[in-house]
Image (cartoon, rainbow, N blue to C red):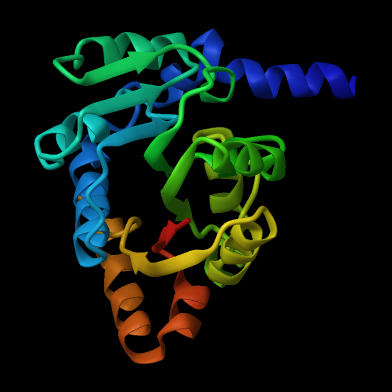
Length: 237
């Protein structure tokens, strides 16, 4: 039985189950994520020539970054889902290439490795992160912060991100940074991002954004731990 469960977890990204639940592969969030990456790199004067996006989904984040990284000679996206890869292929142009294979088996090395909202999906994030560290010099991570009081107390939201989005691990700021450090990364910079607030159009989402913004503004870390609605952007090496 344990092996059967593990296979179902792994297969959701190749069987089409993830596509059924997330038909856009979150393309609508790509401009938000690309902007975050560009801003934190600009702030630290990072101008990579070779860039990879591990778990790139539909490839739109890397597609948008192609026009922002004027110094880049190679932009490579790695996506194991055949459905996601099919979307990626439509975006290939010039130095922008996508691969339906594991980066860890490629032998490639990059100046910058990007992984946005990925390792919370991975059954063994420790092995994943240690392997990723061998393939780039610097890294940008975006990590959902599902471990907050309102999600834990309500119960339903945690199960929602597990069933619909495939999150297997839940983080707050401290546990996310601890995991990166424990797998050999040095943190250069980090910041909260309003991922649960950005472009949410439903009335309930807009109403929920008000106390979230207020709590973060007034209470800082404690406010984010209470109400959620934020992710963590990390620059590391």
